[in-house]
Amino acid sequence: MRFELLKTDGGARLGRLTTPHGVVETPAFMPVGTQGTVKSLTPEDLRQVGAQILLANTYHLFLRPGHRLIAELGGLRRFMAWEGPILTDSGGFQVYSLASLGKVSEEGVRFRSHLDGSEHLLTPELSVEIQQALGADIIHPLDECLAHPVPHAETEASLARTLRWAARSKAAHATGDGRQAMFGIVQGGGYEDLRRRALEGVCALEFDGYAIGGLAVGEPKPLMLDLLEFTGALLPKDRPRYLMGVGTPPDLVEAVARGVDLFDCVLPTRNARNGQLFTGAGVVTIKQSRYAADPTPPEQGCSCYTCRKFSRAYLRHLFIARELLAYRLLSLHNLHFYLALMAEMRTAIAGEAFRAFEARFLARYAVSSDGVSSEDPVDTEA
Image 1: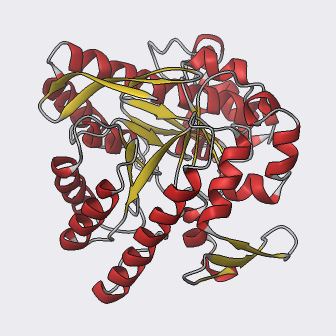
Image 2 (image 1 turned 180 degrees about the horizontal axis):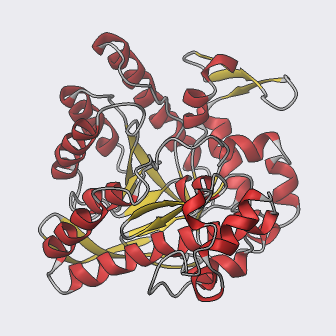
């Protein structure tokens, strides 16, 4: 893997990430294919909306259908018919999100499957083995993600274990074929001193890039942005930065302003399944009665398939009738919106106009068009 920093505009960075399976122009957003699929969409759909790289989930693919089976069938890329780059997480976030099913120790995470109750032990070495078998271009060491708030002493102990796991993961990674990059993960909760310690420990291991974890887990938005500012100033400038699991469109813009290169989040597809469309003016909740006879597209001027072909009235009808096409069409629009937003930011950075773009976007998006949260949908699957 090779990363080139092409231009900066304030804190915002324009880059190019070259992987064995394609080039990613950054800043970039990765659609989430938790179980080897971005829900309701085909690989061709993803190419059409501008996806450059996908994220797949180590934990879920380990449990079903199993990493060894995927490897026997030619790896995840062939299995899901996606020819481009793939990034896999470590399974650490599932430790956080499914905490009631697992127990963390120095050895790893012992947990019961949410599918059938079977018991498993996920160690740093096994996490790397799974990701190598899947054949991802970018993989991660096993880490522990904590909710917010957590006392300093508990966060400190967790971070120390995560750094020990990082060293074990790096050693396991060294036995691979050398074609996969590994990003170290910066944890440390809501504490600057622990974030600094995490940075020092992870950077000492000389990973190919760096992921910022443990944010968007319940902390106030100003704290998240302050920690991003703090972290971005200390990370190596010649390596890619990936903010894990974030976020809303304003989150993406504000994080790019603070030097982030890569993002993933379930919101575009998860919110689609709850009837929410992202637009430049905020969120449209399509089930609302105001759209029952609305002949306009979801977003004026949008070039996605959904906006070119269908009205808000039709989309509302599909959603109220629980027709599966609703989820597909809303997901297409939302991912198109997210990926077009990233392209606009790349153009703004290239033209040294990012600050003006940021101010204009945030001012327009400041109040959701329907006055609803884009962060708290009912359907919690990715």
